[in-house]
Image 1: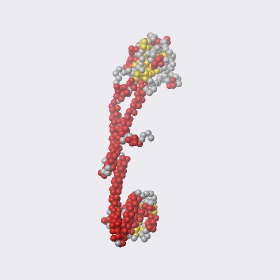
Image 2: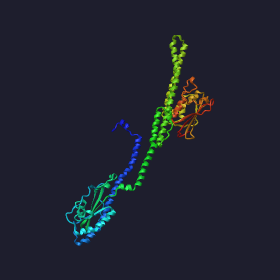
Image 3: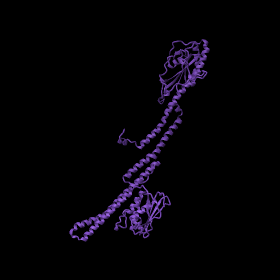
Image 4: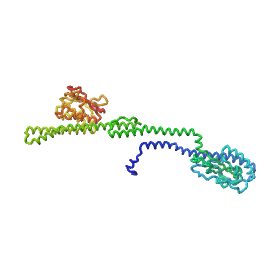
Length: 534
């Protein structure tokens, strides 16, 4: 793999960093508007070129008319027009020759600033000079309204109208040279700013100027060129003019980012950090940390925190259970082991001084206590199996009762109705056999097992006619190692095994008898109703 596991774990980003990254992305979203600004800026350039074309076309038409009026049929003309406009956009009659915008910020190269005019190699003809003087005031007034610069050139490229450049030549300029051949041309050139503003430096539109050169056609020949230029509108200037709207957009973006961050903190990062601190306290054994969190956040984190706290409670309970279990086991084993040790020491120290009766009594005590310890260990193994039992399978109540009857001759076990139990036959046999054994050891000679599936749950009521359970002992019958028959070999683990086994299957057991002398009755409740009860 590219990175080792240690490296990945060490550099795994914390949640707050992920949230910060998401917030930064949200803040960067408005910057995606730069792409829109770029498109909008390009649109401004295209619009500027289209406006210059329209204005130049009108000026070219007026100029052509004046030239024909001033020069008549003998008006000198330049080269034959190579054709201009968009041939693909002409009508079927050939009368429409629109000139379309060509400039594009993404494809058009930006040329250096316009070259300065040079002295003309040929003088301006009188008809052209007169036409220039006639139209110069019109160009000046047009410039005041459109902010565009116009120059009229004759077919040699000499300026005939246009401020201080009259009489000079612009024929060496690339776009003018193309227009003199009868082809419309345009260019983007660098714009020199005497006092540039720093904020404008990020806008390409303010540093360029649009130049157009439109041929003046008389007949089929070039009579001159309308050379126009204009600086596109600046996008930042447009934003400044709409600064109030921009302010509210920025305020909304920052406000939305703050709200999203607050939601993240309240719903995700805050609860997770609290849960992390709480788990550390629980790991240190602090039981006060089992209280619910003050802020749970979203549904998933709430479920995670509840699950973690519930698991922690179970671990604490399990730890308490193990500690109590170890204490009980130690206590229960200590008695027979002490008796065995004492009897063995007496046999060792007494030697030949002990008569056969005493020797036999000590050996009997050793055997009885050894048998009791062995029985206790067997019960502990049964309890361990009950707590980690496989809960799969089903069985029939009739089959389980038949097996118990075969193993306990003389036990009168009745069941009015058969039922399907949601546990394996082996586990069901362990449960019922312990209940039957408990009843028989308390004087019962009849046990009734009644199945009831009136509701969603299946209930088994196991009752007997034995001595019953006193009210004082009723609360302790399921406690581990609690027994009233310790002198006769009782371990106090039968009902604890039954309860653990049922709990593993999601079932429960409770004492339902009325008291001493009335027999014992237990109710076993299984949460899933079987397929049928007979």
